[in-house]
Image 1 (cartoon, rainbow, N blue to C red):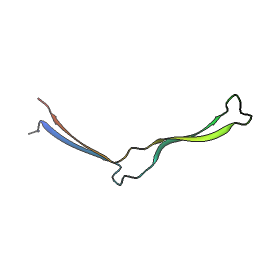
Image 2: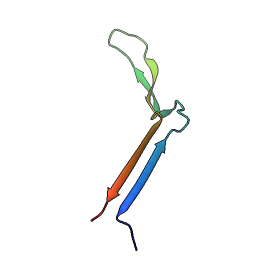
Image 3: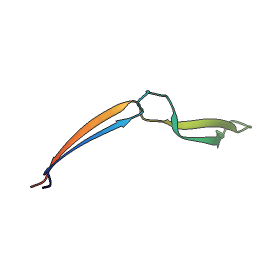
Length: 58
């Protein structure tokens, strides 16, 4: 006999570690600058997150 109820739990970044999801180097120069400047840009990773779901199929 199969149940029509499904329970789900998702936990991300359990230890709440700070991390960079993506990181890349960008070189840019404004019109009035003689030398270009390199900068590191990044997208921060997700912080601690927990979610639960309950699905009922009929």
